[in-house]
Image (cartoon, rainbow, N blue to C red; front, top):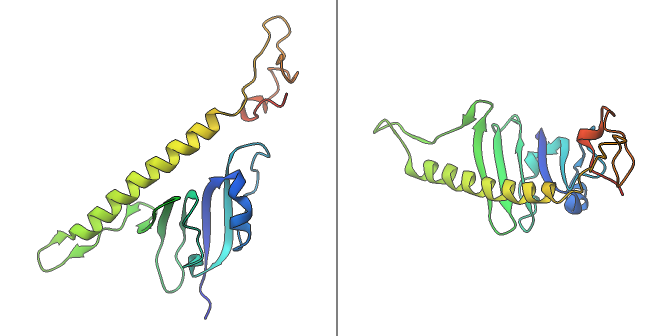
Length: 161
């Protein structure tokens, strides 16, 4: 059986081939130098259930298929978590008898958020390690790579010495 959906993950550039092996491709307009990239798969079969790596850090989402709803996923290299979600937020499991949310669902969302913060912290550290431009006040050019400060794309490009 086939049930296809859209998927997107943010991962380290060094892990690109792992995601390409299961059907992802580099997102359109991604910087060629960024250490953190977005990979997409517009026709992921069952949101790549049981195929997603569990030993590398990444986070992402999948859209609804015909047999399941939207969801978010995160992995820090040790732990992998999936949670149901909508475009407005998380789906909380509900105990209809008591009219209260189920503790299991709340704990799962908390675990997801904690893990996502951990992965995003790692990704921010990788982004900060990118070489930055150092502009000369006399020439308005980067002393490392020579790019001009008035170039429209300079703020989105890391320095390439």
